[in-house]
Image (cartoon, helix red, strand yellow):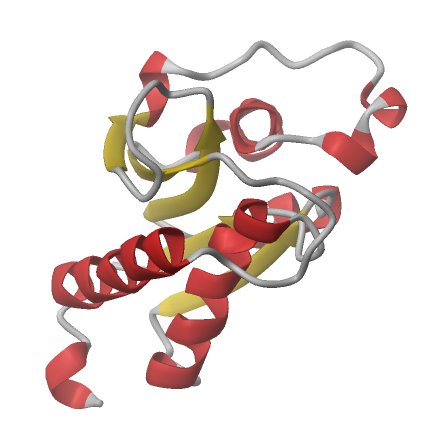
Length: 159
């Protein structure tokens, strides 16, 4: 099974960068792997959606603010419950696309090749100030997500 792992976030907005942190850690641990593609979605990587073609599974990682849960809380959410309908003119917001919008566009682009197995990891954050450091709690949650993904993909024993 070919799996795409996508990390979202803004690397200069403190804990909002957790998706990027997870992607970077996975790249260090997995490296090149024929059945795993790792995508740094940053805040606006619309062109990456075409790279999802041929994947049977997608794993997304992002920050969630205003969750009313402690910072660093980890959620695994079914993607279909939180998808947003794509807007008719995507050029207006390409630089602020969120994963829910990205999946909606991917569904339109990939048609029958859109994977049914989509998992979303969200980490509760509070600090999205203009900083480059992650908080201790959010970084620990990110490390937990890295380990959960490695376990799920069963690549840890091969590393």
